[in-house]
Length: 116
Image (cartoon, rainbow, N blue to C red; front, side):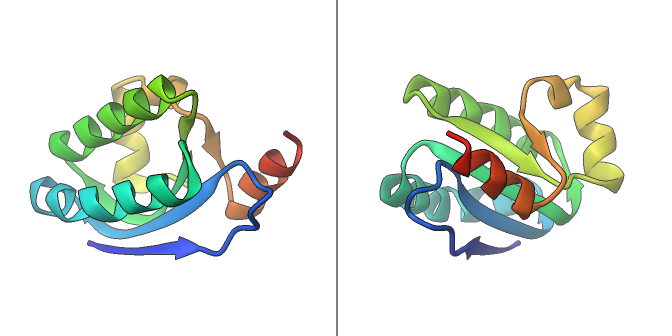
């Protein structure tokens, strides 16, 4: 699992982190600390760019759901950017596309962030 953060302006609501590869049991463990650091630094509005994520398993789905609930408890939210392929199919099959705000691109997230 590779992660990166997108340098978003401070006045925007969403912090953006990109994920590349597989979000499975192994990757979920590696992801916890970078997620916590980003949320601590930027606040509870997190958008994950999953456009380069090609696989997600039940552990990865569980991580996303727990993260979303945690952020919403802090009056924030979790959005997903560009899910496709197997990841989009799993999110649709589990009806999670209704639970998360889904954006097509980072530019769409930043436009939404500037509007609030």
